[in-house]
Length: 244
Length: 283
Ligand SMILES: Nc1ncnc2c1ncn2[C@@H]1O[C@H](COP(=O)(O)OP(=O)(O)O)[C@@H](O)[C@H]1O
Ligand SMILES: [Mg+2]
Image: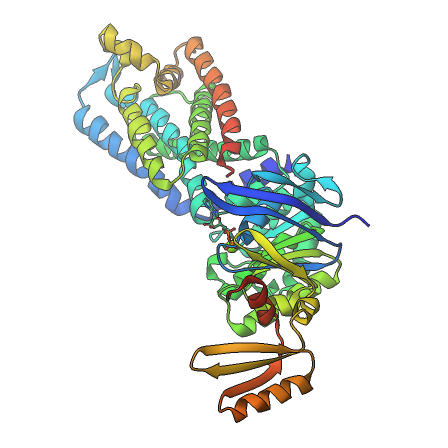
């Protein structure tokens, strides 16, 4: 338990020391998406019977919490290859669970901060959406899934350059295809089904449905829970691979 | 009495490279044991294996009689590690670095506060406790690195080239610190490629070369194997050294040589002589 606390507290302290810079950087890309696609492109656009902006905001929350959750891998890489602090964890009498959960919650915390930043920005735009407990549960699960994948990839790669490859080929495409900017439902079946395999598609579906005040999509919720569990196990198994 | 550290036939291969080819040694409780060898000899590899950072290819190791590879958590609680490359959290404060380490080793908040204050005062860093590590000088970072490893009161401390790259006066200050740590009862394994460091600090020294221990004894015994007094002589073939049991023998030889027109110096045998003798090369 103290091991988990140590790993998580370290991530919190890093966030704390960088908070102003971090909040600023969290606000950049969501603001750009909202301005470019929401206000610029989508002013007169509607999806279903909703203004496009209301469609977009939950999507940007999902995409952004995915990226910030996965982004814990950058911190881990810095700790591993630059600061070499990772060796402190390897030499400490803590379990791999403590390490993995500490880092995952570090990623989840970042994801929540970025979500709050987006909600603050959109509050200014006066949008009619609901942000209840299930909305935040969706953010949590989504961030958890991708933070655990972030930890896994950080353990498996051998250099910082490998990491950029993973991000460019997996995370960035998902931002554009996983229900952030357009409804996956409107696509022809051959395109719809592959996209439904993406975790982000389920996260944005869940987060958007509850933000709309609609019924909770139980299937997507279950998918995310299973993925979170699977991601946690993957991350756990990957830790020993980082020992040479 | 069981040894604090016992290593039996430790082997480590990195692909085709053999970093360690079967080394064995024992360290008694409270002893300061030095591994002395040139870069690439296998010093860091030895320490990384004993602190659980690297898995050995073969061999066994024990802390106080207990196998460290089958009881890794036991071994990690007993060991403190000062790695060769400083690995502090630069963005965190001095205090926060100690706090995280204490939590990692299961210490209570109250105990962490006590111990951190004691060690910060011991290392002369108390006034800097609120500063980011980024703002500290190299010597201060080294001291912080050492006291961080002492936070959880390890019974065995591993110091991997603790003074490399530091100014001579800072090095001497660290030597004092290391002696004090030993005086408090901690068993220490130190690696270095500075011969005078091993000579000054170590109770016993192992000469490590290309993954093998070529000699192991107290500095006095290692030097005594050559003699007491050395005569350096410079001629057309360069520098060579001869060793003698007594000063008289050495002086007789020196007089003879200088009559023959050679340039000679008489001095005491030092650990470098022993190192050169056993390894056939310079560090
Ligand atoms: N991770 C590694 N991968 C491949 N070779 C390594 C690795 N670590 C050390 N070596 C090799 O093992 C040998 C011993 O290295 P090391 O233990 O670092 O020596 P020292 O600390 O005495 O300078 C060297 O030849 C080094 O190149
Ligand atoms: Mg080394």
